[in-house]
Length: 302
Image: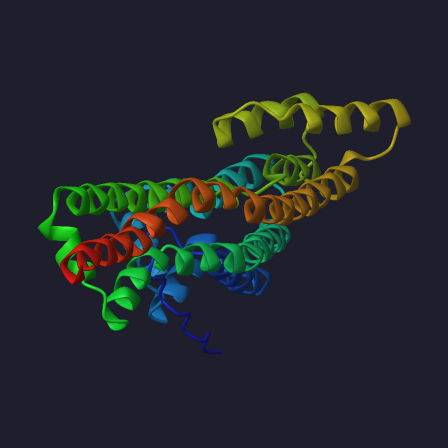
């Protein structure tokens, strides 16, 4: 069976959905009985560039988890895949099931980022459109017959208006980009430690050992909210795996809701650079030169 070649990613860190597709294909190969390293090699034979990189690092003598983690130079989904891979192989959890679970988590994270990106598109696009308003005012003044350009570059007051307007435009653009960037989703998978912890527990590890393994693999301590889920499991005497997966899903749902709320708040926050910078720049570059040109013409007519 030939596995369809996946689209190569343009970014250094591939999107979560692309990583999830690769993980699902690996899960199918593993369930068919292939060893993990052999599954990566078969995937690389199809021309998948990320799998080819893993195969090259395997040939250099790296372990499979290190080869996976070295897929990208910056932190991203492959570092999270490598952490889950280490935990699953250490405790002996079914690797195919672990990859399917992680693929679902990555797809959910991708949906969260897509929802936030869509919600931010309208206010961010409106802000970019309004940023051109002062320059449009200059063009309109010239189109209506006012000596806009001559006034802006030919008199001290006009030069002051020109410099002030340009400074305000640059400040507005910078301010707007900061607001939009702060409203975007974080480049992390919400609830990842709960998912990886569930993988460790599904392999038969104790809760304490699972926490140690996850902290070592991810490079961060277990989140306090995950600890509360484990405490609930202990007090209720129920398996923690499903509770952890439900908590991880809830974390991603909350991230999606928080992202939409940030987009709503962004619409009102973008009014600040509009009122403080863009509209004054419009007055300096559009209205003031027209008034100055009229004032300069009136004495000549008299």
